[in-house]
Amino acid sequence: MNRKVHTNVIPVILAGGSGARLWPLSRSAYPKQFLPLLNEKSMLQETVLRAQRIHQAQPPIILCHQDYRFIVAEQLVSIGVKNATLILEPISKNTAPAVTIAALYSIQQQDSILCILPADHVINDVEQFAERMNTAIGLAEDNHLITFGVKPTRPETGYGYIKTVLSVGGNDQGYPVCEFIEKPGLNKAKHYLELPNYWWNSGIFIFKATSYLAEIKQHSPDILTCCQNTIDSMIRDLDFIRLDETLFSKIPCDSIDYAIMEKTRHAIVLPLNTDWSDVGSWSALYEMQQQDNDGNVLRGDVITQNVKNSYLHAENRLLAAVGVSDVIIIETSDAVLVTNKNTSQAIKNIVFDLIDQKRPETQWHKKVYRPWGYYELLYRNQSIQVKYITVKPKSSLSLQLHHHRSEHWVIVKGVAQVTRGNDLFNIEENQSTYIPKHTKHRLFNPTDQSLEMIEVQLGSYLGEDDIIRFEDNYGRITDF
Image 1 (cartoon, one colour):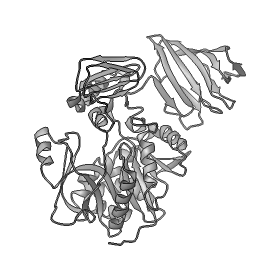
Image 2 (image 1 turned 180 degrees about the horizontal axis):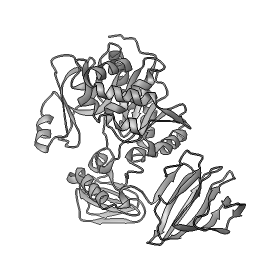
Image 3 (image 1 turned 180 degrees about the vertical axis):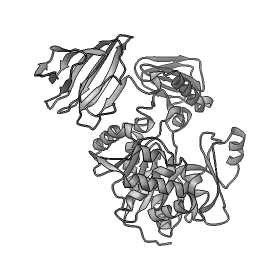
Image 4 (image 1 turned 90 degrees about the vertical axis):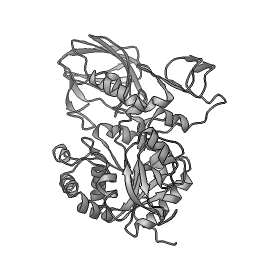
């Protein structure tokens, strides 16, 4: 069937997930979509580049939590993507509000076809992916709301499922939706594997913005009203679009699946027909990678003897394993995870326990990225904290002060321009300075080379929230 291809196709990339099941690599401050889990590019970067293969694709709209804004911006710059629209969510409200916000924003210019793409998927056959997207765009021209189903290859308990009517439609026309099914138990997943009309729910959607908004108005009008109020009050902050937190918090929390796709008469499932994974667990990541003759995937400095069918990942030191099988072992600088491959979905329960204990290992890595560069935590006790700080060329930290700690700065490489109280001076390699508590200060790298330094903090409280900002190049007056 020959169809006209819409000339205004906008990829909408959802990049707000926390990725708890891939702890300890994935942390709330730097979750899985920003990690290079399979190659040198992050899953967000791979998603953005994959979206560019869609015919007539315009610059993307990316929705993410406001805490991720500089991570997203930096990753886009590093792959040469310009003119993306970054919409910042104050809190998570699931997919229906996020897509409604994107649809309302897009129709301010003109009606568009939206390709909704989660940022944390792995799709190996990019050409086949682009072909299926173009087929769906043709269907969207006829006001269908398309979601993509993946034929199950195993009894997966970590994915949602879609039940369809196979007697209507077809591989290129899609199948009508019967129901969406939450992540099932193992017995149900085994049963679904034997049936021809059950599909993994990919979370990928394509539809006209106006078609989607008409359905959200009919089936979830409260979501539409609250989202419209939020869009009407949006503000631009640097290269970002900020949404008012008070208005955004009033939006009902719901997924596209239940808010729209189960209720509309226009929803169809199109088979994706390509390798796909949302990398929702370590076992899923294991399945996506090339295994050696013993069925192992080894990353980093790993040595094994008599190890079978396992995933071993070392970040900072030698990892040795002997006489084990079907295990996942992940080593980072501040945490080690050991789990049976078949129970890796339950890692989120460990993360929830750590959150209840207020352990920092759920939020931060020892290496923490900032818009000006990054720092790595070298040592910490109750009264001393040592960081190795790298500042990008021509970049500056905020003008700030601390109430509970003083700081000693030792320059390892480069030149630092230091503001301390009313003084402004430079220090170079192998020189140092002291910043007393209650003193306004700022660090600036005036050169074209990275600045590296050691910062020693001493005080009664060393939390990241002991900071008062007076000026900041990145709009971070009230947050980190």
